[in-house]
Amino acid sequence: MTTSHAYQQVLETSRRVNWRLEDLVGEGHALNFARPFLPETFARTAALGFLSTREKLLLNHIRTRGYLALFELVESFVVPFVSELSSSQAGEDAYSAPALKHFVDEEEKHRKMFVTVLREFDAHFPVQVGFIGPAEAIVHTVLAHSPLAVTIATLGLEWMSQAHYVEAVHDDSDLDPQFKRLLRHHWLEEAQHAKLDTFVLESLAAASTPQAIATAVDEYFEIGAFLDGGLKAQVSFDLAALEAAAGRSFAPAERERFLEVQHAAQRWTFLGTAMGNKSFLKALGAISADGARRVSEAAASLTLD
Ligand SMILES: [Fe+2]
Ligand SMILES: [Fe+2]
Image (cartoon, rainbow, N blue to C red; front, side):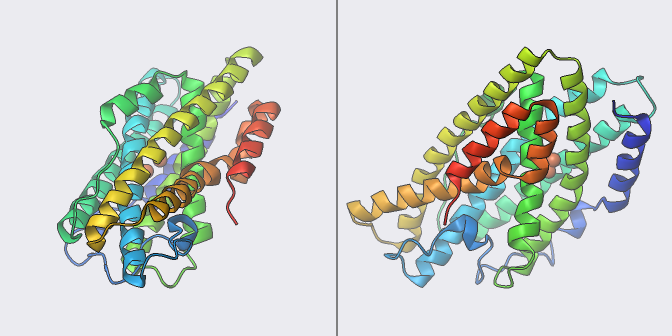
């Protein structure tokens, strides 16, 4: 059982690493569109040989917009979910509810950060890039699952944001330094959220039957499949935006290749790196060894060369 002391420690660390929105966005913090933002391991532009160097950079930027918008969307279901948990734990001990409340405040700030950067992106980019939605319907569908399933999904995404920065962004010297800064600061706070989500996962699992835990893992796969449908739809928006930005139409075979490569890239970015994350699988394995095995196998099927 998670102790009050464990919540207290996370709360103290969270307060120490906490940053202010104005230190990260706005004047003096513009993105440099002459450089890529997302690492190639996520953007996967090199596999599209029919694109020119300029078009590959445009695609990298288009994928970046979707990346930011998807994080903003995900956090819009995390906020009401964790808010409710925080209220339900009010008065239980001195630290769990305040730690969860701090988590919610940070996610609200992250959403503002993503929205601000998206606005900057749209003002600079030559064409409009579509995004899946409506957001409310997506949030509603995710939150219709059990709290245990939503916690598993959230924990996977928290670890994913950490892995993206540490494993793919930190050492990539081609990327725009300002974009790297955004992801670094996001990760710093997400690392604390992952600890809190692990506590929540443990306490929800302790109050659940083995059958309810197995059902939650099934629901986690349902949430993953639902998000995958969204990712597939996003690829068509990205294709349309790239053709508009490049000022040319691609041949049917090129479009087909684009859809195939980019859907696999989206899956790897948002599902494979979460489901295959060792820390996530360890936390999941502590409540369901079979669940962790199934998720790990699914992640392996999404791995790209
Ligand atoms: Fe966040
Ligand atoms: Fe988070």
